[in-house]
Length: 229
Image (cartoon, rainbow, N blue to C red; front, side, top):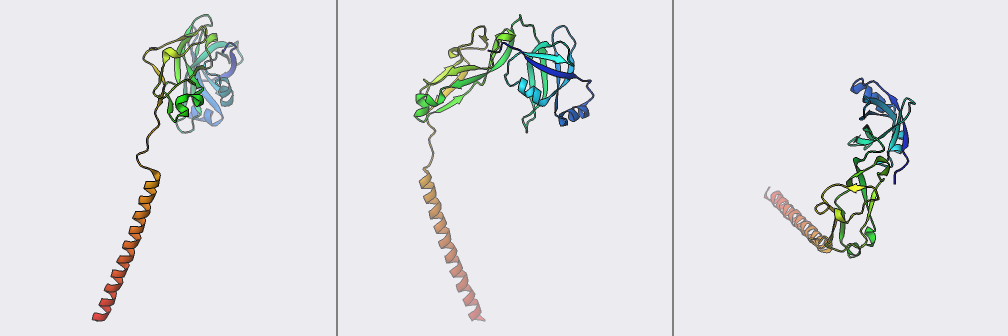
């Protein structure tokens, strides 16, 4: 349970266009915005490594301190990533009150998949839902929610209604319609690999034979041409 806020030191910045943003990223900083509540939005820059460590426990409350000022409770609202490298290029943080519930997303972790009877029989376990929308006090938001699938058999489907939320956390969405995971029968191969290899060998041998026959015909034609001269 995420009960202790993580302190995050950031530096106030004045937005100065895309060139300034690119310079910040080259220097190892991530630009961001802190907004919400009764205060004005604040643009900031934060060390990329510091931010990565602070966001490692996603859903945790952050104590954001701008230029060493008293910290403000906030949570991650949006995180933009580079489509190629995958590193964070921008974050939006929203101020929160610790005595008021908020809605956010929390990672869903499936456990016991390797022990499931359907998996042992060769079935394919597929996780359909990777994040759950929840409502809770900021200090009650869990880092993740786990669900045990060790009893799943082939053909079984797990719905959201089967997932148990931690105390103080409410799961949002349609519990009887949201599919969490499925366990499908083994995928059938269309052709046996041995047959494919055999066919490849036969085709190869035929090709070689045809090439030899063609070479003999060409040689015979050449001899005939020389004799006619």
